[in-house]
Structures are given as structure tokens and as C-alpha cells.
Image 1 (spheres, rainbow, N blue to C red):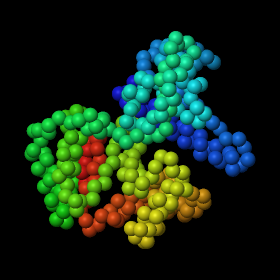
Image 2 (image 1 turned 90 degrees about the horizontal axis):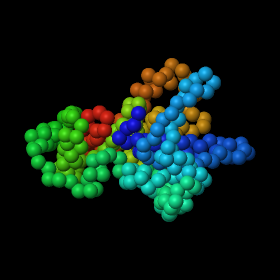
Image 3 (image 1 turned 30 degrees about the vertical axis):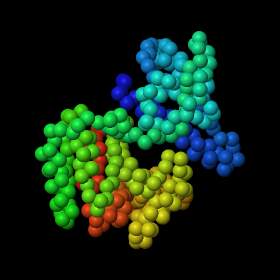
Image 4 (image 1 turned 45 degrees about the horizontal axis):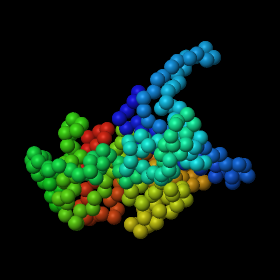
Amino acid sequence: MAHEDHPQRALHAALQMQQELRDYGQRRTEQGAHPLEARIGINSGEVVVRSFETGGRLEYTPIGHTANLASRLQTLAPVDSIAVSEYTRRLVEGYFELRALGPTPVKGLSEPINIYEVTGLGKLRTHFQLSERRGLTKFVGRERELEQMQRAREQATGGHGQVAAVMAEAGTGKSRLFYEFKATLPPACKLLEAYSVSHGKASAWQPVLELLRGYFGIQDADDPTTRREKVRTALVALDPALAETLPYLFALLAIQGAPDPLAQMDPQVRSPFSSCNTSVQAAFLTATGEILPAPADTSFDPCVFPASII
């Protein structure tokens, strides 16, 4: 099944694969073994899928120019990297950082083609951000909704916490409404923002993880040790008492060290339900520790589920 964001999904998966291989290779190196390295090639386009039987099972494989070019890109990619075609570049530009490798001869093609190396995530996360970069049209027809959100913000500023949910069909302007609302926030408000993405809908924690990574300044290139240090430094600066939540935040962000303190806890205490609740509390304390008693606005921009302002 093809998805509208299948190029982004492919590159996200490729980056994660390379990161997992690097982590595994580091462990092998520490054990005196050779690290594993891989090349990945990605191309976008139409393919023909044919079926064949092997070992009594029916399997499928894509054939055609699109699949063949992806295979060629894989052989041309630098070691431990990801190479994409010009067509894929146009589909993902802004969502990922790319480095041009220049015109490159490819077996089976009469002329060299431009290929690009994927070096990391870009600044864009949503289609709306891409539209914003291209230029937005005049904002009209949402005065009543904007006033309702501003009233909720005023009540929150007055000490009465509010939750505002914007629900509508796709493409009707939910993200634009949030964009205009954010422009009205006074300087006294602290804005925490995260996005949901279609390929992350299997993880209920995805928006929370996005918010925490942004808050702690965690970069994709950071190793687990650097990430843990960033979290620890930020928490201690907020409140030394928050240090007791570190094991839960490390587990939530999948950056546990060795030995893992949670693994040494009593099974009853570290049960999934108990750990989940404590992780939620740790995330909430982190998100609110710096901004209380200042009013806070937290924005979850929509891709899969409706957007919310808390």
C-alpha cells in the first residue's frame, strides 16, 4: 500500500536502521569484533509487483526501473550512508538534510544522474510548515474559533487550566488556526510544541517524546551518553528533587544506561502500569517545572489525530 508520505517513511526507516547498526557496531567493537556497515539506496516511483513461489510459499517482489535504480543507488552510496535519487529528493526536501554527491554514472543509464546523501532530519515536520515556507494566503473566516481559543488562554493565565481541542476534516485549516493563535500569545507565555506524524501512530507516546526531545535539546547525532547528560543537566537546573525521575525519563526516551536502575527495582514497583504512570508524571513535571507559575501553552499539531492546546 502506498502512502502520501511514503518517501519520508522510507528515509525515517533508513536513518533508524543506520543508527541501530552503528549502535550494534559499537558494541561489537568494544568486544573486539569488526563493526557492521551497510549502504542504503532509495528511489521513488511506480513499480510492477510479480509473485513467485519459493519453498511452498507465495512471495512478491517489485520489478522495473524504479526498483533497479534503487539497487544501483545502494551500490553507489558511501559506506554507512543513505543515497537517494533526484526524484526522491524533490519529495522530501526540507524534511531531511541532504548533501549533493553530484552527477554520477549509473549502470544501465545513458547519462549520469544526480544523487544525494541523507545526513539527518531537516527542520520541517508537517505539510503546513512546507506551505508556510512557500508563503501563506490571507487568513479569513476563523474569527470566532480564534476568539474561543484566546478566551481559553486568558482563563489559563488567570489560574484556571484549560484544554481546547480543534476537530475538523483534513485540509480545513486546523494547523493554520494554531499558527494564527500562536502569533497572538503574549511574551509571558511559554510555548511547548510537538507534532504527530502518520508513521508514528503506532506509538501513543510519539508527541510526548517529540516534546521532550525538543525541550532537552536532544539531537539525532547525540549518542545515549550525551542524551542522558542533557536530560540530567536540565532537570537538576529546574529542581534537584526532579533527579529521582531520571530513570523513568531515560526509559521513556530509550536511553537507559548500564546498569539500568529500573531493572533492579522490585517487580511490583517496575510493573508496566506503575512504570507507565511514573513516566507520565516525570514527563509532566519536566514540561511544567520551568514554566510554573507562568502560564503555559502546549500545542500538538495534527497529522493523525486532532490538534490540541493545553
